Image 1 (cartoon, rainbow, N blue to C red):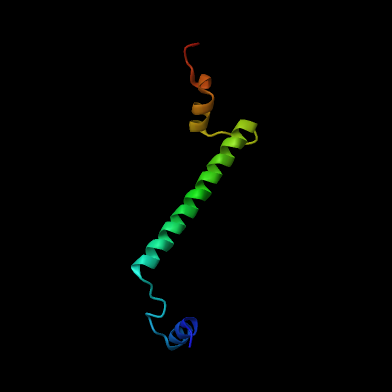
Image 2: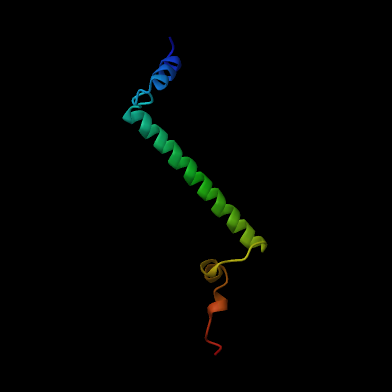
Length: 77
């Protein structure tokens, strides 16, 4: 009987420890999940930056202040 069959049998019997994992397995999974989330976030930020440079999206206040600070220059008044 393979490990997968054993786990599926334990699940069928309602065993609460059917899917137990070690701390090392959890740490590996967590690192992988965090790195994937970070990569997605970085990719979204990079795409947003490209879209702002191309002028295809509207900027929010922070982005406007960073990219076009002359808009907030009140020395003319």
